[in-house]
Image (cartoon, rainbow, N blue to C red; front, side):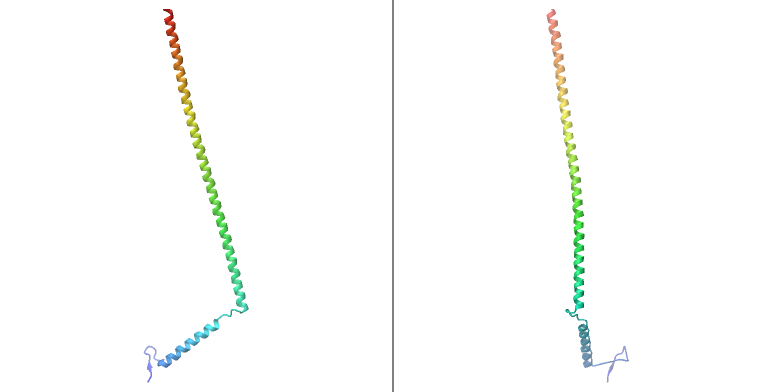
Length: 140
């Protein structure tokens, strides 16, 4: 007596031996499929495909290297431009500081000169006052 699957009544369920045979057949079919797809490494078509792939890979590597060289050159140019701009700013800042120092020195010189003129005026006034005093003494 055979057991019948309740889900599909038309197909009977086999015994252990039948299941083992089915599994072995499936493994054998899978191995045959793998063997059929196996590539012969000495096949000229395979070697030609490999050469094409290697050439494409080398060309891609060359393009990548060129692209990186262009990027690096652009970065270097930007860095140089920024450095030049910074140098110009530093030079302008130094010139402004020098101008400020020069203006300060000119102001100090003007103050010293004004102080000297003031002292000279005071000396003249004193000399005039002394002369008037001496003249007054001489008249008496």
